Length: 239
Image (cartoon, rainbow, N blue to C red):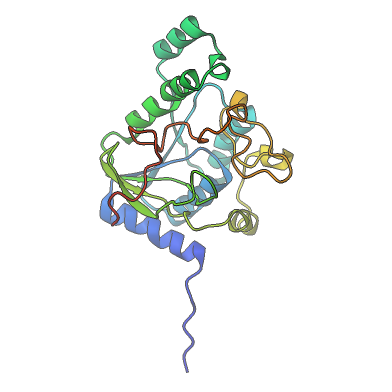
């Protein structure tokens, strides 16, 4: 009797990315250079899938995060496309409020994220039909991440192929395939964003506790994945 082997999570990831590129291109993958995103990066570049990889350099990233760009170039011979905020918008914010004004109010924090992340993302996704992300389903605001949704904010399909992956599965993949990753993970970080807005996680804290830690009772989001009502974009239209 022939035994049928069940598809593994990496197999399913490869299939999902290949289908997104084949059936919904042009497709782009927004990488924050996180551990999750390095799993997707390795899959795309190893298999030669036709998906552009880009990142958002906010101007406030850790040096260790930017080092990952060089590691990708060295390992795969691929230059990740980098989008930066509009200099005039950054200068205006700093002049009016101060460079680190985001510590003083939620409104100013979201405005900083809008300038440094949300606006560049819109430019990066212009002309694309599919957007791939490394979002995973975790307790809290991200407890219901769907594998595929239609994102009305950007007018395209959004693929979250790691939605059902666990943190342990991510690290198992990285170690098995010897994929480069951000060195900050070796120093207690579990979710990494801009340097002034990220700290290592403490024992017993959830994955995203180190993001915007000074905000109490607020969703740990920067706006990239939120709709106009400030809610996480969910499966308004599944495919």
